Image (cartoon, rainbow, N blue to C red; front, side, top):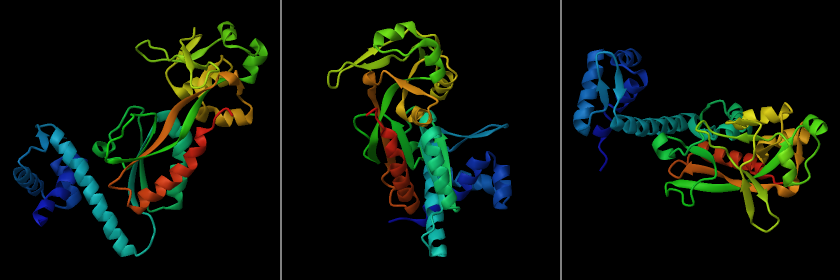
Length: 308
């Protein structure tokens, strides 16, 4: 049976962790620093684990404390939302919802969707983070995540929906093509300025080429006139007329429609990574999460556009 004892000290603990000090928490909760310290000591004694590293200069969470903080903030957020729902007696969406997005894709495709959704629901507080590496939603306290690609098998705690696939297109500016001509074959690229994606350790991403045989792709590391380790930076270089690059369809969709970029070698375009929408199954029943999932699915699915 659940005991109310388990809730004692949680609000104080979260406040201390967010404030970074006993003094800051005391001011926010209108208590003395001594009372705050004793509440944390009682909580640590009950849990039989140290939650904070304490020095004369700073207070920081232990690994166990950080994990407990993520859980507690989620619990308090759920309680707050339940209370708001009882008070409001309405269907208005409210409270914090945490979304993690890939960097370039999130900024160019998803962020505007989330902001429009938030404007339509002023009591909602989206918390948006950007990361290109895998983030474990449960550990990071994320309600919804969007990922390009991913593992073959997702954790059981996650719901997952494939929204489609990106395409890898060869693009250049009209000005560059006027000055250097339009390549008609893969071999022609050897005579052009190629802008490739690379990493700080010297690795360069190969370009992929359709071979004409179903499902078969050839990958080549191209001689590069410029290497840029950021998708948006790559786009800027191509728009500036510096050369030809292979880029995902979602990144260049608007520029191709406007005519500021031109697709070349369309017969060699290849299907890229799958666009995945992920969410915590334990949170999908919350109206704010369910509604945002629906909006993101509807808005991001067209990003799968191919060269067809």
